[in-house]
Image (cartoon, rainbow, N blue to C red; front, side, top):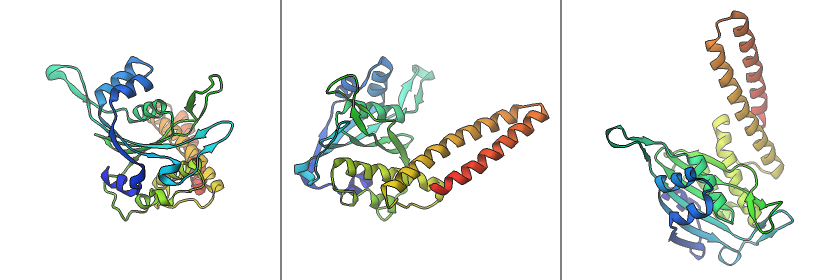
Length: 260
């Protein structure tokens, strides 16, 4: 995690470096007993690393009818295995990193860049926010958080690491800056399909890439499901039909991947 914190190149003017009690997260982000259990059992430590504000990083606030980006919070969480069962039968339960990241984004009223170190790997997570339609003054998530697993063998010279630096993000306002980090995560996900890390050059290209990635993920789920069903199918005709459908989906996936 220290490599990614350094890679962000955050100025000392915005650093907070303050521990946050997980009780605060449980009170503000956990709507159910299962969520509270996830927070209490899985989190080892929460650190508020930095508060990006106009007077600390020289970037302007953003405001329109749907959202206010007055500042951006940078947080880190160290998570641990949650024990399941008791005594000799106790096992280590994997951390639900997707849900944990979502709870953090819901609990903090500002957009968050979250660094999450869990037993199963290192994750980065971001989520756009907007005003709630039915409750004045309330902020909600604008779509699902983007939570991606990052390779542990990255070096300071890796393009993805270099791309995260704060000075490399758009500086027009906090919405543009935050979207710059979001595009970094999208480029990392795209690399899993293309084999190389490249940033998009225009907002339109970024939108096209995100749409293509979403469609490819959906197609991968469908293909995996069909393959599983086909392997269990005993009727030849249905096996043939499933294989033809898989072939068509693979062709579509190959075509969609050209936009990544």
